Length: 132
Image 1 (cartoon, rainbow, N blue to C red):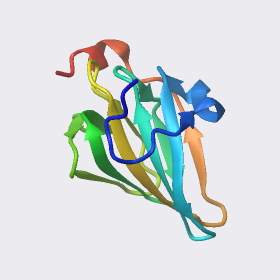
Image 2 (image 1 turned 180 degrees about the horizontal axis):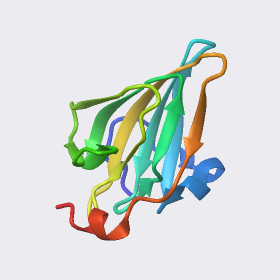
Image 3 (image 1 turned 30 degrees about the horizontal axis):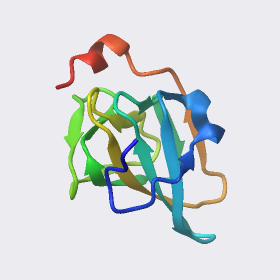
Image 4 (image 1 turned 180 degrees about the vertical axis):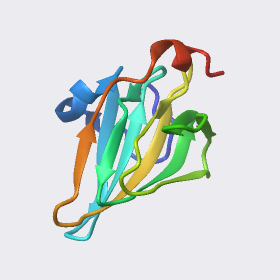
């Protein structure tokens, strides 16, 4: 796969593969005991499952290709390079590539004692396939 961003593609995201439909790649960029910053690249058609970050927010900086994110109860939002998504703490959401295009985002995740991620069901395949 051709890397859609200037950040490293990284390695196959095997540790979290069970929470993705399709292939993703993870490239850690920076971090300490306060924050984690990583580039996540999604092959065309790849999404992560619905999930909730309990106790922390997530910031997604779109850096390549075209993708989407969706907060439960809202319509999916397209993401292109230079656009930012803020996911509030304790919010059910998903993100990933467009059905026919690769996508990369830098994920910024604060670290906080007691914070956790709850992985849920896959994105509805029929609804996802309707995204342009």
